[in-house]
Image (cartoon, rainbow, N blue to C red):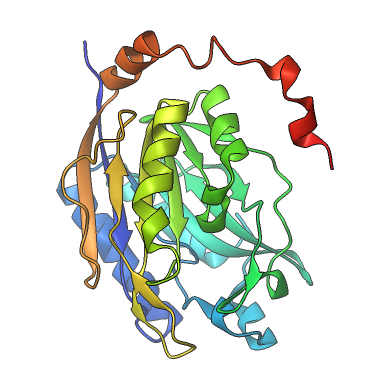
Amino acid sequence: MSRVIRAAVFQTAWTGDKESMIQVHEQAARDAAAQGAQVLCFQELFYGPYFCQVQDKAFYEYAEQIPEGPVVRRFQALAKELGLVLVLPMYEEEQPGVLYNTAAVIDADGSYLGKYRKHHIPQVPGFWEKFYFRPGNVGWPVFDTAVGRIGVYICYDRHFPEGWRALGLAGAEIVFNPSATSRGLSRYLWQLEQPAAAVANEYFIGAINRVGVEDLGDNDFYGTSYFVDPEAQFVGEVASDKETELVVRDLDMAKLREVRDRWQFFRDRRPEAYGPLTAP
């Protein structure tokens, strides 16, 4: 019997303050649950602006401990209330001065399942991330949730195929890629890389990007969030390139078996030949 997961992603613009941004996302979770969604992922650094357009230590204040901080606790209660798996991309403080770009994963009963920390950290104009984040150090976890096996990759990570593959080998069925990427820089890659990764690794991908221009710089975030299947087909329409939008789609997990039986990519790998790829 086919197993269908109703999954959601949410793209939105910066509201101007943390509390109202959290409230917007709480409402999005309620709206997703009302539409029957079982899992929802927010955009990168969801409760703040994309502050990496500037280098200002004042934004360190956005970091919280995970899972002990108030944002995770607040959304654990909401996940339990709604019976909804939540992926929360956040700014994490492990200890003062040790900060990460992180996604916390909350199960449908409100339990905290774990975290993924972004591995690949850019440092280019408009994306000064090394000022704010250390590289991730918790590997490529796949989370056993109420709806299935979920992986997370974050924004700039998507340019590196190794993590996509690690998540596939670990059994991910859906991988979410919460992002903040701007018009004119990466648009030509946005609808190329993630469908290609879905094909190469034979799972579904949920791609999320924020929208709008924030008052910290000229980055014009172009939304166009989507789900893509392991045949590189968009599941339904791609979201708006300007407006806040909740994208809810049905993902048929039978497609994974169908594609993996057709293309034996995992069987035909040659890891014994790949040593030079990991040489420093």
